[in-house]
Length: 345
Image 1 (cartoon, rainbow, N blue to C red):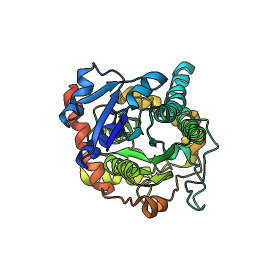
Image 2 (image 1 turned 30 degrees about the horizontal axis):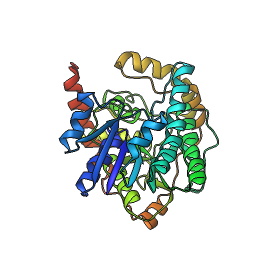
Image 3 (image 1 turned 60 degrees about the vertical axis):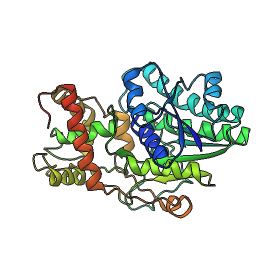
């Protein structure tokens, strides 16, 4: 099967390309600039020579990129949790909504019969701790966080285009994606790096995250492309760890990493943006916490069911949380060495 993968140099995109090659599929990989040798090099190392440059917001070039392929896996999107200007927010929204709609419409125009779209559990509602787990039938209504809005509106734009074109669409909703084989940071990787640097040495926020390893996410995309399925599929580990639990697991893997001694009370979350600014200044890592994010998270948890993915897609988690975190940390250390940090951690 010939598969076009957009965003192929990102963490998930590269993982999908690697998994497709391992399964014997022929991959066409798109990145923003095919002439960027540094971004193309990891893909070429996988044996992928069909690399095209593509801005997913441009329709006609997207159609040409889709010609001659059997399936499109659309991963490309902006993943950012702390934006400082309205123009950055609008750019992320455009990347998500226009990119998703273009993916479906371009595939239909080129005669591609199936599109697999990388969405996110950010499109699902957070709930009270005693609530039932949410499923693929649920959609988030609190879209104050720009990234949550971008992913939700992007996926809805894809479903609208699929209805209008008749194309078969599958959307994959992963949690926070960890694991190795990344070439630049994502907010999830920055969160893990911050814990390594001691960001939770005084306590952890009272919240949790739906986590999944990149290899399991990639496997879900391959299954979605190969099998006769459609619809939404939640791809997360069975258990969504709390932030203190993450720090404990990381400490057990490496005793030099400070653990969060306590879970901080909810009222402390209101100071989250200020504390995040201080942490960013001291550790020289990107900002991550906004007032909108705090308001969305306070008093609620991520609680999702991956039952449909297991039953209909045939997917199962294969990489344990402890192993994934250990290998993520090793990859972060290697990245910091390449960047020349004096503190490798």
